[in-house]
Amino acid sequence: MIIMNIWFATNNIHKKNELQVCLQAVIPGILVKIPSQEGLNFNPYESGSEFYENTLIKARELYNLLGNNEPVIADDSGLCVDSLDGRPGVHSAIYGYKNDIKITSHEQNMLLLDELGDKQIRTARFVCSMVLFFGNERFFIVQETLEGEIVKKSDMKGSGGFGYDPVFYVPEYCRTLAELSVQEKNIISHRGKAGKKIAEYLLNS
Image (cartoon, rainbow, N blue to C red):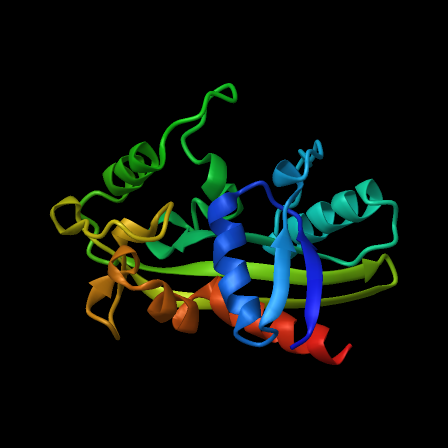
C-alpha cells in the first residue's frame, strides 16, 4: 500500500470527504489534509470568471502558504442551469449572498427554484475543474461534468450529499443526487470523475 498525504485547497469538509473517497479508490493509503483542520489561515479571493481560473488561484495560494515545496490539489465547482444562462455557475457557493451575509444551502436551493419558476427547460450540469499543482510551471488540470435536471419544489428529495444535491435529478438513476449513496455519487459525479483522473496522474507522476 502506498502511504502519502496530499493537501487540498479548501476549507469545505464535505468536499474533503468526497475527494478522499475518490482518491483512495486509486491510492488506498492516501490521506487528504485541508488548511482549516491543520490550523492554517486560508481564504483566497476567487476572482476568476471560469472554474479553472479559480482552481489555479486556490492552488497557488495554498502552495505558497506551504512554502512552495508540497504539491496540492485544488478544485472549483458549481451548478450551471441552462434556463438561467448558466447561473449560478462560478458563483454557486455564494449564490444569494448579500454584503457577504451567508445564507444556508436550503435557502440557496429555494432561491434557485424560485428563480427557475415553472420554466419547462430545466437541464443543468455540475462542473468540477480540478488541478494537481506542483508549481507555476508544472501542473495537471482536468474538468468534468455531471448532466442532469433541476426538480420542482415538490420533488426535492434526499438527505445525502450537500449543497444543490437535493434539487439535482440524475435521469440514469431516477433519483436526485442527494438520494444516492456515497459510492454511487462518486462513480458519476463531476468531482468523482475529476478526482479519479487526478489520482491516476498522481500515482504515476
